[in-house]
Length: 129
Image (cartoon, rainbow, N blue to C red):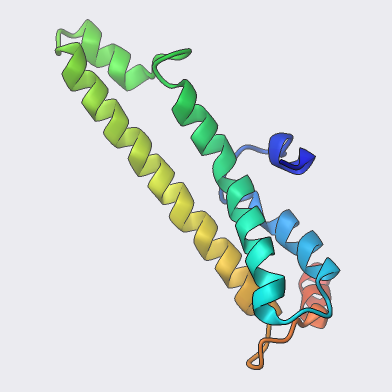
């Protein structure tokens, strides 16, 4: 695991892939699209989903989410409250996953041409604006 995966700025899953995508694609200049894009895409998605997965692993053990606590205090059986909380956590993780995948694949699509060549001039055009 890289240091960037652990100490990521922000904490939002959809804002994580862009810096990783920029840095890693510039290092992969001479490789073909699949060889250059697959590791970058995998690392960007991993770093984007890391905060969500970490929060899901701590839910219920370290922290009690507000919705689940409110339901338990209002008299709903704890098993029912936990079911709703698990549903909400999976919906959040799914939305973050779809958003991160769209951002990464959109970035890879933008940085490659029809012949699957890496176009760093397009990256420079994005940085100038």
